[in-house]
Image (cartoon, rainbow, N blue to C red):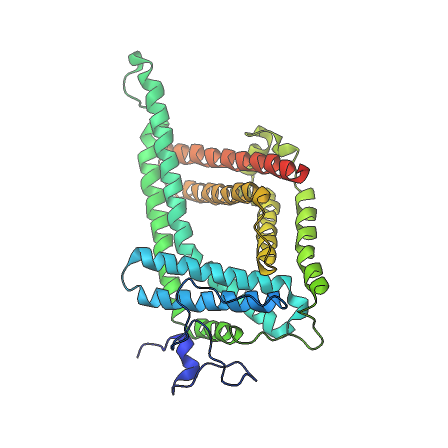
Length: 364
């Protein structure tokens, strides 16, 4: 028998989903005449922004879950629903982290961890597909550039160097490895969405849509308390950025930093502080959303640069992993090595962009 949809588990006999202590409160965005349409948002409570935001995102989570179930075999609709589901999960997770001192500790800790698990599981398949497209596109550009250089010298004839010879095999190897990883991630996501663990998460989010469990004595309506907690994310972000080697990122293609990244497997040791800044910047954005603040246009370019940094770093790691495949031909290994170096250069270019746009934003 197929598992019952999570938002229906608490109303198996036709009863509405209710939070503990809530009397007759139907969860927004489920079923019934008053259900919100997909994409709609609940009205904000001006005196309690954290509650309003959490309930708004919980409703978005449930609507995305319903949209995914109704998408059938339509790949674009399924991808859009999963993207919306991840977005809502990440926003609830971030809000639980930022305003945790106000919330019931054990509940917030448990739901925060489970939403992090769900977001990672749902995102892995699409990350693999994006990574494969990025690497194959980079290989095509490298091959075309090599062909153009050879064509500029007719006496050399057709390109026969290690890069043109190995690019096709390198692409086939990456396609095989990352497609396998994507298929495994797809299976893991399907298993997760049908698991009792996910149903427990969905039920917790459904309850959150009608009641937020605050700890005794919390002051979620006090603007000074809520504002102080939100401002902590800005302080942590400023401290993390101050710890970055921004001076080293002063050149768009930094040979010293690229060499450091190539020396370590995947460049992880020097990438980690930049990934942390990206996570803290996202926390800051979601905290501002929760308080109803308008998005900061001056920080958007920096956020995009850090997204490109993460994508290039992950692509470089995938190229390095493929190059470590046993018994591959030397031209294939050479092409993968060049591809890895190109991605590490893109990492450095993204760092340069971030340090430039962030310093400009700070001066504004």
